Amino acid sequence: MIEPSCKTCKTWEPFQGVCFNGDSKHCSDFTGRNDSCEHWQKNPCKCCAGCLEAREYHGRYYYYCYSCHFEFPYHPDEDWTD
Image (cartoon, rainbow, N blue to C red):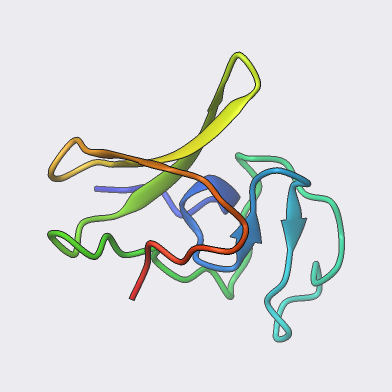
């Protein structure tokens, strides 16, 4: 079971760490990877519909899928979710 947190939320931007969910009281706020709120939305993988987690390693940001174990590079202009 995936724990609801910002790092697995569809509306969290990992590079700046900002929530952009208009329904959340944290919208436009900086939030931590492990923070969460009642408006959490699963960040689905396009390949297998598993849950993506935003990760950072040595300054490189990427999404990791818990189901298919694939890593997707993070680019602000690309959408790896449905």
